[in-house]
Length: 415
Image 1: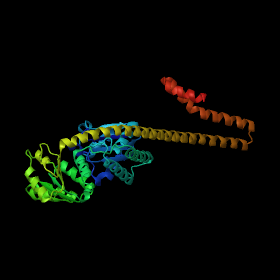
Image 2 (image 1 turned 180 degrees about the vertical axis):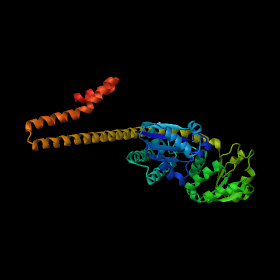
Image 3 (image 1 turned 90 degrees about the horizontal axis):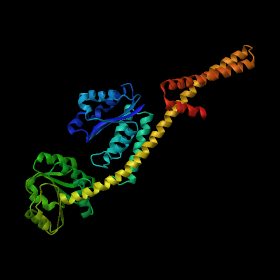
């Protein structure tokens, strides 16, 4: 019996490779059921996100090759090509990996909270597909419990570790209530999108997106409920903005001191926060000399991000110790389950032999055989039956020279 974790993630494969083995939501049920039809896969859960695709399987035997071949065949990718990007963990390491993933310790952004919800959703989909049994029910509930404890008792998910998140946190410190602030995002690339989503989570309802390509700006505006504009509109957008976050790929500054000076006058000197996340700069350095204007660059935020990353790493070490303890607890439960099953089968087999011997003795008594002879025969029969399997096992261990097994049998006899 083996618990397997097999997959690819942002560390082992490019986005092009990850896209090839991603599972669409509408094919997940069929995939799970197909996987458990391999024969030796008794339980399965598939976690598929933009940064990872992972198969969690409970195997009756330890051969992983059929699972790798199944994943390759399902996505029509040659197994030899796929194997170079795969990682695999078995038993205790697989359990530890799952718990680390759900706790955000294996994420692209250390400590990010979204992955726990994604793992929970994957587990629920597997339950609905009928591919979760006793082992995985206990495993995933233990995983959700430790992920919650990590989030509650450590600060691994606290403090900004991206410049976009740091920019939003900075805005929170300057503006007491972001929900009433009007924000101008200059640029609509990945950094701007991340900032927009963080702002939306903080309750910002008024967002303007100015971008060189109108279609890209409209797409981001639609995603966060904002307004799309072109860069040529900056002269009248700036006076409306309490917060400006700029992140274009322009080789030259696109927001000059004069433009901001005019905006401040139209705002009647209400304070403005300008955050320049671009390299090279989008906002002229001299803008920071203006009254009622707070200008921060990507360098200012990088020092904050660097400090916060170190703090998260420290908290992650504490989280890993918590996960290790939970994984050991699950392993102990799994061992106890195995011993319970073994004892149950052992008792059942010998109970049958005992019932047969007693019935034979009763028949002998009914036939007039002396009670002493019947009891002696019953005792001999039961002794031979009970000793047969252990005797064979000890003889086999002796022939193989299996000293570990012989030591265990010796301890059993002494006890």
